[in-house]
Length: 197
Figure 1 (cartoon, rainbow, N blue to C red):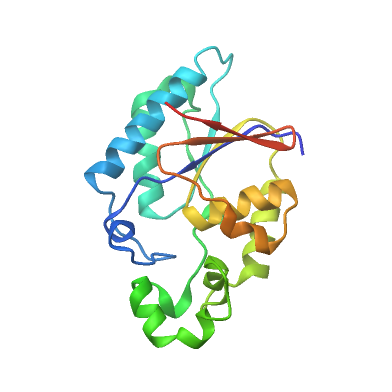
Figure 2 (tube, rainbow, N blue to C red; figure 1 turned 135 degrees about the vertical axis):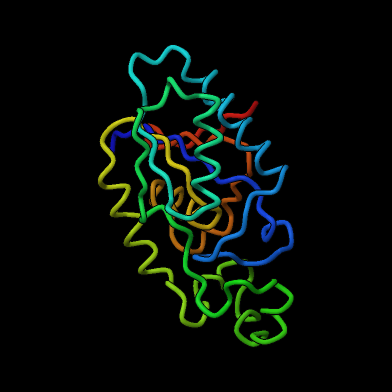
C-alpha cells in the first residue's frame, strides 16, 4: 500500500478521563480534549503548509471524533478538502457489555477472564463485543481502500489496530502501540513517523 496516512486520535473525553470504556457509546470532549484537537489542527497546518492540493479527511462517525475533526478543520481549513468523509470503518472497537463501565467495574465482574491476559488484549474478548477478527477485517478493508494522502480521525484501540495491521504485526503486538492525544502518526512507506508540536 502506497497511501500516506495521517492518523489522529480524538481528544480526551469525559469518559476517557474517568477510565470508562466508550466503544460505540460516546461522551463529549473535555476542555483539554478540545485544546488537543486545536493543537492537532495547528500542527497539521504547519506540517502540510507546502501541500499543493487539499487533503481528504476521513472521520469516525462517533461524536468525539467528529468534534475533534471540526476543531482541526477550524485550524487547518484550507489545507483540507471541503467535504469531510464520515467513515464507519474508523469507529472505535465495540466493547459490548463493557461499554460505559470503568476498568475497576469490569475487573470486579470478569476477573477470571481478564486474568488470562498480560495486557489490554482482553478488550477484544468483551462479552457481546466486536472481537479481534471482525475489527481487524474492517480495519484491513479500510487500509486496502487507501490510495492517496488522507487524514484519518479515529480512536485509541482502533488506531492501535490500524498501526499493527499496517505493519503486519500480530494481535499480541496491538497493546504495545500506545497512541497519545495531540500527536500525529504518519503511516508511510511501511513505517510510522510520530509528529509532535
